[in-house]
Image (tube, rainbow, N blue to C red; front, side):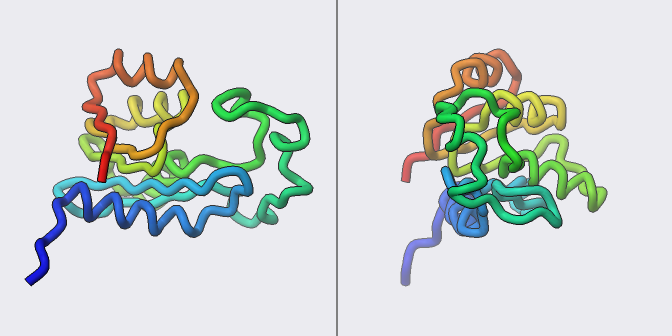
Length: 149
C-alpha cells in the first residue's frame, strides 16, 4: 500500500493543480486557504472576473519590461493569494487563523492582505524577489515555511 502524503504534501499538490487555471502570461500561481485540514478557498492569478485574459500582446508589465517583484500596480491581474482571500469574503467564509498555501512567496501586497486577514501560517514553494514582503512576513506573527518536496 502506498504511503499517505502529509497534509502539507497533499495541500501543496492541490495548490499546484489550482495554478494550472492561472491566466497570467508571466507566471502561473496557485493558492489555497485551509483551516482544520479543510480547504476554505482557492485562487489563481489572472484578470478580474469578466475581463479578457491577458496575452503576450496585452501584458503591460512585459511591454514596460518591469522586473519581477516590482511595480505590482502595473498589472491588470490579481494575484492568487488576493483571489483566494476575495473568494472567501464573497462567500462569507472565515479564514482567520487559517493556513495559506502558495506556489510562490507572496508579494508585499498579498503579504499585507494575509496579515490583516488573520492568516496564521504560510507555506510556499517557489521564491519571489520581493524583499519588503520577506521583511514584513518575518516581522509578522505569521508562521512562514518554505515547502520542499
